[in-house]
Image 1 (tube, protein in one colour):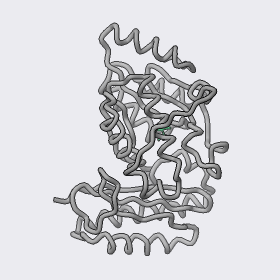
Image 2 (tube, protein in one colour):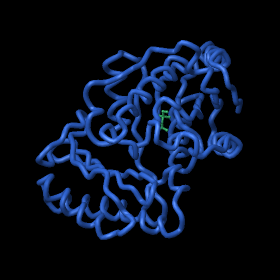
Image 3 (spheres, protein in one colour):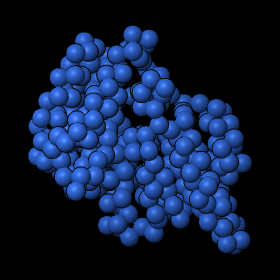
Length: 282
Ligand code: PAF
């Protein structure tokens, strides 16, 4: 496995693979990789001849008061995990490589980004769409893999490649959880032991919500109330949102019908965590 830091090197590697007729899978990440990322890389390795993993903490998707500086980084551990999982190349650029002097072009979206994380993180998805479209142009993968944990991001990226005719297949992969239910996230490392315990309220409310839907609940308001009431039993939890939306449009829905995303964002102390489930109801 190689680690490269320039766009030129990535293009050269991919061009060599293409000459041999090999397919390319891509897993974009911000590093500090855990089993959630590993499951994406594993799937990409199964479905492609070569796999590229990008490790880039993208400054453009962080708001001014967010955790860009403290976001955890460990390239050595990331490289070990990528190599052990079968990736062929890590692309680890400096911000200056991605955003050269005078950079002023962005990819933005009018729909899908107004609700959920878009409300409390107004510039986030512009940063995500811009960097992911740049990465797609650099890596030119056949398939790209995204976790369902960032369900709104997955919906946004699917919309972006459709709207902009980017020739890549977007593959959503299931949420990977700790044994006690907490969804894996690089941000879990911010939690102290008391907060780590309190964070379980997210997955508990997700599991309870999913059960209610399986038992026949179809009212978004009733579901939101039940999940909110449960989260509020945890003194360290402060709700950012508990929402029910159509998964493809990320617009609020009153009734659980079709492919529906039930998503939550909750602060545990200073750490903002997200979780969700998707149900298809005919
Ligand atoms: O999900 C992430 O880690 C990031 O948003 C992504 C897709 C790598 C873009 O920076």
